[in-house]
Amino acid sequence: MLDMEAVIPTMSLRTKTDPHSYFFHEAHFASLPHKSNVYLLANLRTASGYSKVLVAAIKGKAVTVEYMQNRCEFKPEEVEFAYIPDNAELIAIHSFCQSKDEGLVIAVTLVKDYNSAKPIYCLNIYRPWESGSEFNVESISKNFCTLELDAVPYFIYSGYLDSQETGKKGVILLTNSNNQVQVYKEDSNVANRWILDEGPDSFPEFHELPSVVLWFHSKHLDSNQRLTAIGCQDGYLRLCLVSLETNDIVEEWEYQHDSAITCVQLFTSRTQQAPAVMRELGRLVSADSVFHLVVTSAMEISVVYRDVLMNGFRDQLLLEDSDKYDCTLAVCVADIDWDGENEIIIGTYGQELLAYRLKESPSRDNEPSTFQETGSEKTGNEEVHEVEGAVENRPSYELWWKRSFGHPLLTMQYMDVTGDGLCELVVVSTKGIHILQHNLNDAAETLLQRMLSEDSDRREGEGV
Image (cartoon, helix red, strand yellow):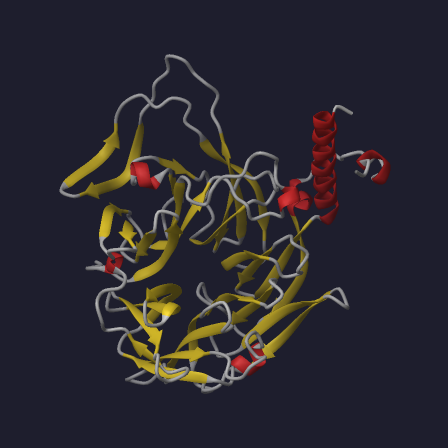
């Protein structure tokens, strides 16, 4: 066995005094020819496992940003998707893998003749057409299927249907102005011919929606169930637990906010997102653990609903000051300090990026507390406005770090663009694409700490 103290020279670990430099620096910026929107960022997974950034401008131009390993630099490149006319405006873009071996599928919604009396809304679906091009964006962008839509499209997401005939196949879920979520699947008889799924209701959680769905997010649980959070334009919020075996709704919760829901994301407190050696030892949990839900809205303070499978919408924690910087448009959940605990990152139209972490409250004996909800929850016919009883040791979210930008922030994702195992935070503003990279010196120090700790545990175990 190697002696870590002999291999790694002693290194003093610096105290982190400047939180702005501690977390991220802007490694790259790429401008866009026109403004983007909240739906026009996609993560293109490559065959090597790292990501390319795909961002589109409303006026029909799309740009990929790839990290060139041999030159250690980011390379932006314009992508021309087939069958997007010059007079078209893009609405949303999304990418996913149809199956493990079939490569990327890219879905784009657009409007043609926007200024005419009868604008035409379309869904274009691009996918590989020859062997070896499964992850080649330039090739994928030329092979398409186009579908004319009967309503204004909004948010695009992907899911999976599992059948005995076709196995597990990816499908496209599209929200629209008719308060629907429509499902599109590939025709099993014709390659790259996509059709509207008009069969039995494959996603029962989207029944009888009161307004346009602006965002939703799903998690598949180890219990063969799907948990879906849905946010609507009128502030309506729904959470559904669906059995994948029977395709029935097992449980459903509803809640009414006072303004449009701009983003929802399900998450667990602990994560395995960071490389294994960067995580705190002994803090790993199964994926099927306690789920929380972060919700951002246009005019209200952002909120986290805790342990939603147990509490529904009754247990909420507010994200301090998240309503002070204009409309909150984006949210990202990630472990940005590699301690195994997820942080919440908020992007605002007021040009601020806000990071929150959970702060456990100290024990206070004989000091019971109650908390008041800002809306109302419905479970069945019962409406609950307040949770009563003693709630000891309630945690809270603290505003831990923030960064100012020169332009409004629209959307963001946490993805590994450089392929080094550490994710970057990709932020899209009204000006362009910002790639924020972790401070590599701090990453090296954290790695050294973990390795020395592991070596120390090994020595103790061997009685050295």
